[in-house]
Image 1: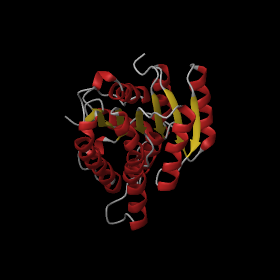
Image 2: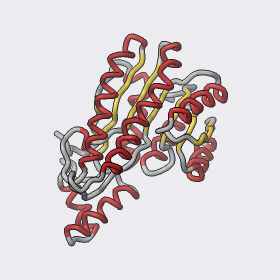
Image 3: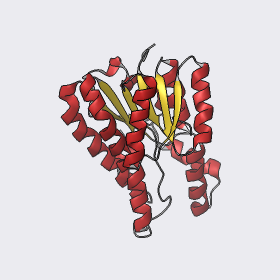
Image 4: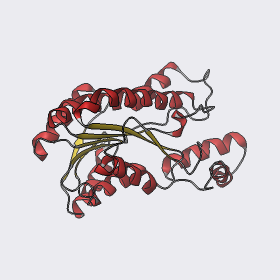
Length: 260
């Protein structure tokens, strides 16, 4: 198993690709602390991880709250033996969909930056002293291909994912001497409830069916298919493992060829 005996914190572990990431990490041997605000689905996924023979602790945490994040790290160390080997930041929001820059409200803009950028900053800030002390660690942030290019009608979300690249790359430079890798996985559209909502919003605006919109998205990708949650999970496991020991400060697009 790639992650046998590793201790990993996963934010946003229970919805969409989050569950796939959690169970992939568990199958590869990691013991887990699963965290978010909606505890009911997290407890369900924690149970699935335990059924795979792993320790899994569910902890409520708002990743935009420094106090919550600090408490999360303290709980992780107390419950699972002091180490934190891996941090995976899946938690994030969509922001305004099908909305121009000028129709985006300041509140909407602030909210998506808080979740997609500040949340990752706070969790990284909290775990890095532990990883530096260990002289070992892996951080994997989930970004998006809209952070690799501009995207009309998704300005706020795109801005947040561009910003996450800066957080990832700059931190990678700072912690590299401490044997810590920091990378980003950049999905395009991923099958699941969030993608269905995006398709429904676009279908309404364009007067199309959701199936037609789905096919439109797939047609933009070289492989002509939408990613499955497991595709993202496989990339996360790779970057969290020693197979990626010489990779840091990078964006791995898992997108079927939407950004080439």
